Image 1 (cartoon, rainbow, N blue to C red):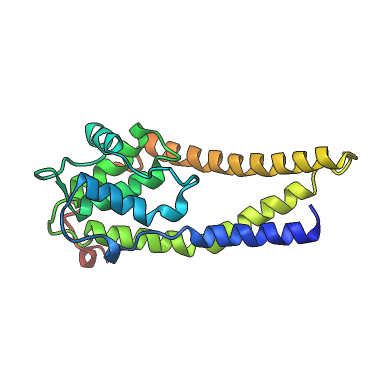
Image 2: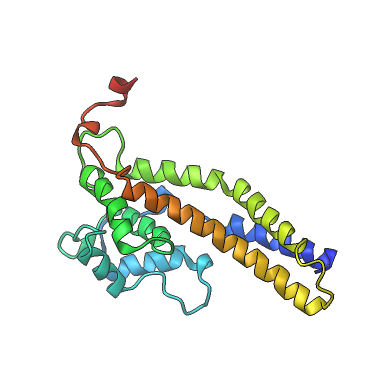
Length: 213
């Protein structure tokens, strides 16, 4: 890969990461939606993340499966509220990495303690907003990490004289590095779940932030 191609790739990576925007809390309807409306909303707002034009971000079968596996509370009179939408967005991101069982372990404390209106300091909307602001602020670090892996891969297999073979091996090394990074982080999440670090005690929600200071 010459300097021009490398520069174009670097710019493409940076642009791709910047485009991974999330659905802002004030974009989620305050009104209840029927399933078809939920699917359209998700499809419209995640359009930039589609790999292929015909991809569906969410289907009726998916939603029913999430409800069946208790990742998502049942709708009220076939209508889904704002908190349902928030959970579906979390599920969308988690399902690409974690199993249904692990997602259930992560979301169950959230739905049990924050899904319904109560006297918690944080609503589900507050939690959603803070988490995704934190994630969005990490995009610069992610970009640097990806480009660092890219540069390392381009320095590998220098003894391979065949240019086509070396280019393939460089790209293979880059992909393997990215996959290993995902594997390590996935393993950390699974370890947290297995150690019960996401277990939620009922008395946690009883105290206010002022009590904890």
